[in-house]
Length: 79
Image (tube, rainbow, N blue to C red; front, top):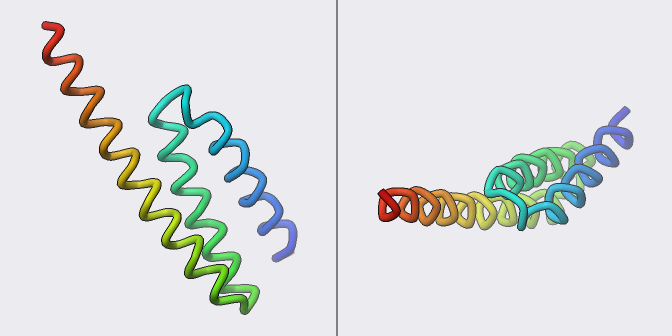
């Protein structure tokens, strides 16, 4: 069961990463999938993997936040 969970979240990570350029929401989904992958790492007893995936999640959330601010700012300046 744990292996299936890990395979699922890593697959979702890969899909969302590939789609990041299409929408900031794919970046957000990637961040959430990274958290899922981190939880898998911790549950599987591979804490270094869990730590690295947690860091990737924070990086992706910061990227998403920046993209959203830029998108909102662009919309405001167009008006």
